[in-house]
Amino acid sequence: MLPLSEWLKPQHGQLAYLRFYMVEIPVTNKAQEVTTKDPGRQSIVPGYQTPSQTPSQAQFQAHQQQGFIELIKTHLTPLAQSWGYRDEPLELSIKGPPMVLILGNYSSGKSTLINELIGQEVQKTGQAPTDDSFTILTYDDEPGDESSKDSAIKVREIEGHGIFQDEDYPFAPLKSHGQKFASHFRMKKLKSPFLKSLMLVDTPGMIDSISERDRGYDYQKVISDLAQVADLVLVLFDPHKAGTLRESYQSLRDTLPQATFDNRVVFVMNRIDECQTLPDLLRVYGVLCWNLSQMLGRKDIPPIRLSYSQQIKNPPAYLQALEEERTYLGQLMASAPELRVDHLKSFARIHGERLQFLAKSMIAYHELRRTLLLKSLGLWSIVAVAAGIGFFVWMLFQNPESMELAGLAGGAVGGLVVVLWAIFVRPWVQSGTVGRLLRTVDQWVPIKNQNDRDHWLKVKPMVQALIKTPTNKITQRSFKRDLKTLNQLLSDGLKASPKS
Image 1 (cartoon, rainbow, N blue to C red):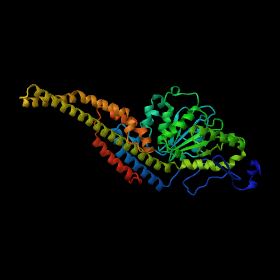
Image 2: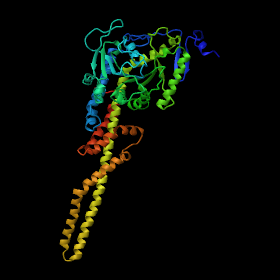
Image 3: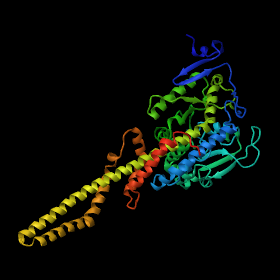
Image 4: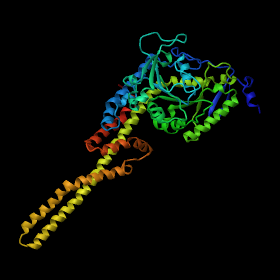
């Protein structure tokens, strides 16, 4: 059997595949240049493609996006705000171009990757943590000449509060993270061809010895909010810190699984050029696979893409065999506009189903509350009748000839019991019923499957708040009417793309 180093030599085949864990590495004689039949898609950096679309594709996708936004604005937002599901309109979270969120440990090569995608150095790079801000990189629509590889890119920067007020982007809800976050949130607008149909979000590197108090804002909550609206999430690792930091663990184990779908998260081992030999790369890859299995709590590790900078001098010989990995990563980001439509449809369906489950829970609450109150009323009615009859019998026993007077007295006593129940007992019973239903809320909500259970975890605080609010005037009839509308929307309106 040939040694690995011999098997990889060109004379043993024009194309061979080395499978190690879950990675498939194509081995060729030389690096392959990216080619495409689409003349509108040009490569800025070898191995990456500029996302672009034909005018008809762009118009069709824009039409679909606007249709979903109008659907959410018209049908879901009014219910979400009246039921306390969201303070901000739902559509504020889905405006703007397709978004790629880039996460990673410090010095994992996030900024270097972004600079290569854009074609020039826009983000600061370094071995130590160099940038502690969340940076949005998007296309500048202001009049002016588009930048090229040989010309300097003019960058317009916008600070946090200015971004929150821009209704063309989905970042208004982030203002709830406070002033400290706003001072670490900025947007860079530039005329890079790569940004014409998507925007990139660069994030502060995840490190070990830091807490929410040190940052001044809840880092994991910000990551969660951004991941919910991102169409693609890249998680970068480097050979020296293969996912072993505390913030990385929390993000991968808890934050991302709750905020987005697994198929939107792509793991990338970056800076692989720092592995001098292929065996070194395989060892590092194995370590990352093991660490991910521990962090994700699963044995089926998702594919890990490989990336490196082409600006390095004297690259290891094996890198020429991995050009297709870089090509795949570029194509994946270039597909963000296509993923956007699926994201919007998922967004509408998920929030529609959650509102649907919230309505079902409140209908169940009203029915159970009415049943318990009717039982209480029935019990006190029996007490009132018994008290009236008892007083009637006692009056007859005292004076057998005063039957008419005894009847009136018995009726008065029964009526007095009812009045006492209405004034004193009924409010106490209602309060006790509400408290009892709140304590047992997990037992009476209509959970039938895991999907219902997932929705319940999200809407449970809203249901509890509606039950606790004494001024809540939303009736069971109103919930039933709105539930009927939601059922029709979910069964008809989201089966196909909206027409308008």
